[in-house]
Amino acid sequence: MVKIKIRVLLSLMVFVIVIMLSNLAHASGENLQISNVDVKVSSKTLRNMSNGETISEEARPDYPVEFRVEVRNNFTRAQDFRIRDITVKTIIEGIDNGEDLEIESDRFDLRADTEKRSFFDFIIPLEVREDAYNVIITAEGEDEDGTNEMAEMRLKLEVDKDNDMLKFIKTSLIPAEISCNRKNVQLAITLLNIGNHDEDGVSLQISNEELGLDIRDKIDTLFARPNEPESRFSKTYLFNVPGNLEAGNYPITLRVLYNDDRNTAEGTVTLIVNSCAKAIAESARPEEGPGVEVITPAETGKTAAQPEIPAGTVVTQESPLKRNILVVGIVIVAAIIAGIVLVVSLFRRKG
Image (cartoon, rainbow, N blue to C red; front, side, top):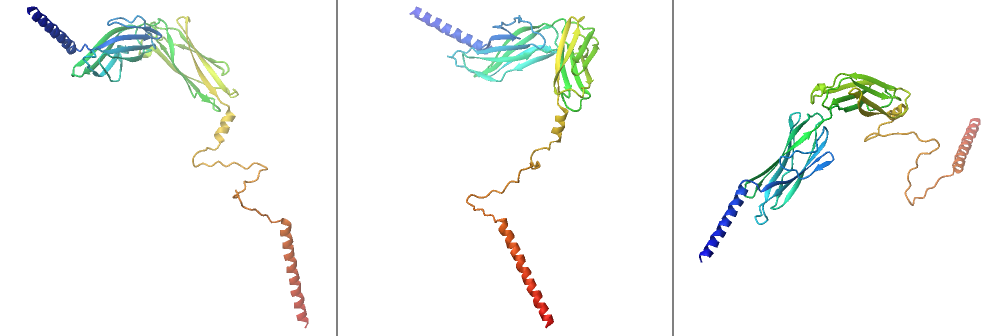
């Protein structure tokens, strides 16, 4: 009897302990878990990252970085607690000129013992300092008892840069398409130092043989100072296009030499040249649209369109010969009557 009571007491104690642990976990908000994080840097994917881990693949300026975050509701199916209005947020701290890059998911619900994956796509800024940046991933929601559920994971993202790297970030033509007016075409460029070293003795060449284009320019030092004016070179060049140039597409080559001419940066911008005669013909063509009627002269040798004749109508046409005989007969009769009247009048005078 005593053994039975001891067993009952032990069972009750175990039950109470399980309930207390369950409530403790519930109260501490551990039922929402970031269960898995994969990170894709450029084309390489690193799977199942751990809290506090450094991402082994180094990112570079203008690289895409994707975080795939899986969140789990750890309530058992027996408990059947749904976590509502969950949002997942990924932050890369201070990477954008001291500002954070941040993306937040849409809100969603999770049933007990289920999980959901969210995706966060970033582009590393072109102007960035070489450093290791904190990545903070959080998930937050509320269960059916109104308890706030929250989970967090921290990672490190390292950004690496080439020592010597210049890049064209703007190349544009105004206008990009020409016809008759071929003077004062504008070519605007912006060159950016995205490397670690200052660059001296930078030279620029803009060329196209058919356009007769061969512009050479020397650029002052481009400093390795992200987000500072000294790290970029912007200029607009003017040129004329030969008047006898045939219509077509003309690619203009942009080439920069730097680091004692050991490194190059290249770009291309295309000028479209249309035929001047074609442009004049198109400008002289009447505009068509609502309320505009375009009248064209009738073609030689063609008659005007005849009115449509209803089906079943019999069409008759009088012969021209018959019409002429009738007219002649009327004229003769009138002449005879006039002659008779004249003769009668003469006889009366004599009498």
